[in-house]
Length: 330
Image (tube, rainbow, N blue to C red; front, side, top):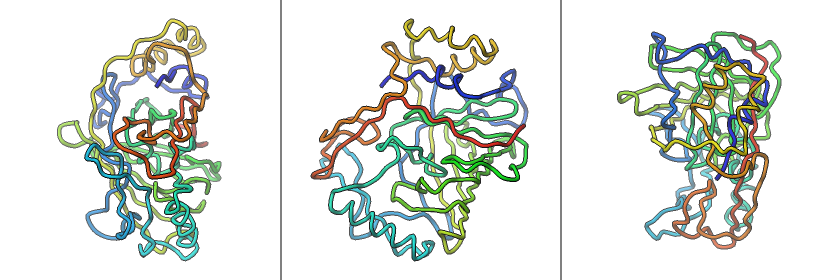
C-alpha cells in the first residue's frame, strides 16, 4: 500500500512550531520516532480495571477476527445488555446486529473509508500503526490507514463554540513526565464509538491518557467517556499499543516531495520527511479501491489468513487523508 503522507500533511493548514524535540525536553514523554510506529494489540477496546466498560460481543455470538488457526471469522454482534446504553442506542444497535447476523452489513470505519471518530480512532484498522509528531504547541496523531490525522493543541482551553466534526476539537497537556492527556469535544454524530457500532451524540466528551510504560516500549491508553445523550453513565475503556519497528521507506522521485514542501519551513520539511517517507511507486493519494467479493482479506488490509464470513465482501482504502481537528489556537 502506497501513501504520500508528507504531501498530504503539508497541503493542510498546519502551522507547527517544529523547532522542538520531545526527547530533549524534561517532563515530556517521547512518542515520536523515525524508526518505529505504535501497533495496537487489538481493534477492540479492553475493559477498565473496575467500573462500567465498553460494549463487546454478544456471549452467544463470540467475535472471531482473522486468524491462522483455521477458525471461521465472524462479524461483530454487539452485546445489547451492557448497562451503559440508553434505549434508543440499543434499538439502533439491534438493527445493526440484525444486518450483521444476516451477512448484509457490519460497518467498520476503516473498511468503509470513513473517519474513525474519537475514541474509535484507537481501534481503527487492526494492522495500521499509529505515529506521533510532537511540536511545541501541538501534537499530531496519525493512523497510517487512510491516513487519518488528529490534531491536538497543547496547553490551551477549548474554544467557546468548537466546530462539530468527526474528530472534534482536541486539547491536551503532558503530565507526570510519562503521559499525554487529550480532551476532546465537538464530535459529530456520524461516527461510532467502536467497531460494535455503538452510537453517540454531539454531547460526547472523551478524555484519553497515553502513558508510556515498560521502558518506552508500550503505551497504555485509558479512555474516559461521557455522553448523557447516549449513555446512562460515564464509563471507561483501555487500549494497549506497543512499539513496532519498521524498515525505512524510500522516497519516490516521481513524488518530488521537496518541491511540494517549499512553502513550509525547512525544519517542517525535515521533521515530517524524517518520520514518513513513502515507498517507491506512483502517488495514489485520494484513491479508493473496492475489492468486492475478495475472500480471506483483513478489512484493515491484512494478510489473507482465513475466509471472510459467508457472503461478505472486503473493501480497501488507499490514500484519502482526512485531517480533522478544531479551532483551539495555541
